[in-house]
Length: 373
Image (spheres, rainbow, N blue to C red):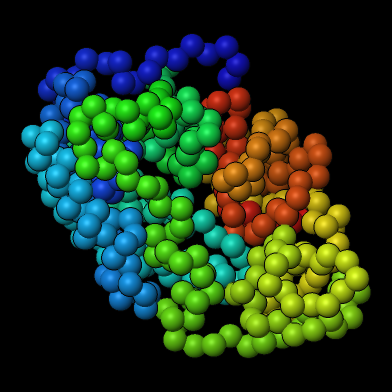
């Protein structure tokens, strides 16, 4: 794909097109709405209600898309002079995001629920709602870009690499990209806040949410305990030779690479290197044991054009904050692929997504199924 010259979708003249703006009540979606309106689109603002306050046994009033956030989103829409609606997707969010999140932890994985929320809620449920309303585009405040060449649409990294969110959007299809706008892709975060201030938005100085919306305190295990209404059995901490080192508090409390909170006296630092769910054991070893080169991904998704059948080269990213690294990818069929890095990577974790890049272009990706020793 080297050498392609792209035409940004957002440069097209579109006075008669209608856009449905997904508004979380934060500064990013507020500015996305303002920029879309400025380009001449007919805009409709909306907030997705994704959960009830008692859905996970914790007060969620201060989290994303809370009652206060909907008030802020409505305030921005009033200021822009556009319609605003609230759409309810609580059942879909429970079934498509929360339940799989919990199941993934119970399998000894560490999931990324934001990716599933984008795939199944924002760009599926809301996308369908937009089509029913006769809207031509979905608009969100994600930091990413969509560009076009010869009728094909590509997902690219944002201009502001510190805010780039292309990783959590890899599961979108080319058809979804064709009907999606990311107005913030060409802006930096300071520029976005400046636009919000110029427009007098109540969201201009609003802080960003750092945690998963339905786990605002960051206590994933506590959320799972409350959601399931049960405790998880304790088991053994063991070293890689099978020697018992202590007792763990339940598989769901641990993730690959974890060092803190183990409570194991040792003459050196120990890290979680494997979760043996079948035998309810947590394997601890040295930091060097966390470095692996090869993994298998499932639910392999390719965004633009025909999915490759032969081995190809790219860069792969194994978590949101990971810097993508050179790798070879071999499709295995049945939506699986083998990814082999040129150099070993630390703490490759089942349940996270491996996202594949060609420079700034997001090729696709999949969920890390297992690490090959």
